[in-house]
Length: 377
Image (cartoon, rainbow, N blue to C red; front, side, top):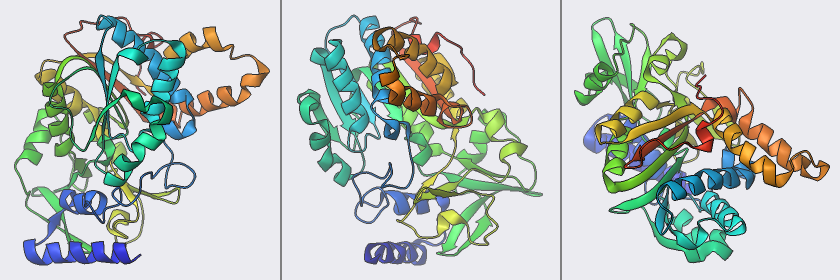
């Protein structure tokens, strides 16, 4: 609690010194302050002992399925040595599951160079222990992407946690939300014309009263990642929508949401103080991803969209390969079937999470993850 009090003081001091903070600046401190931020203070924030669940927490099956897709990509790249980059890797659990599956199936394990990219020093310190028997594949662990890589990059639930600007449309035009204190916000002119330009690029018109989040950082990340990829694939798994759906009446209250102790508080809260503003450093803060802008940024850097679909349909295509070797109908595999159901359930992880697969210098290979149905709900 003392550390969180220190973070609150740091935020108050920043407001005193710099004036009102954009929501993006507040999130940057609340989540990523290197000593006091939410992600900095623990090696793992998910699972039963954490604040929320991800697909990785369902079990090793998620990594096993991704290994099937990565193995196909490795073949498309001509086999041989390649880089596997996990961005937002946390303590490395997903990569550990992928590599153990590759080792067991005798696919790409001997050729892989693993790079784990993670902002939290505590999480990075835990990675070798989590990797354990597959730690020999680890080539780098850093808070920065490799300068250049050739292979496959996975980003599972990374972009939703990047700091966002929040805007609201008034009768006289677009205004931005600013944090004026630990319990108060105000609206004022935009901090950057890039926010207006962002909405123009995706052809979005907000109606008076609508609130929206704009993730300039995610677009910057996508551009930079695309430039560093020499040849290969990028797989982004996250919750979100295309721009037309995200910036519509359905989400007109915005999507900024907090998670703590497996409870969430979204923008529909009736509390006068926004949930994301309370208890900085003690809760996760996320916003839905605008996949239109992410896709456009990648394509502007020369990447090709190979697939964009619900996680349900992506995993069904991979399960068909898994089923042939695991005999899923065997009664002993009940736990495995239940885990698969959790990953693919409509209304849960299966439909809320989208999968965007991008390629560079690889053409349009037939991938199992895109073989069942190319559909976004």
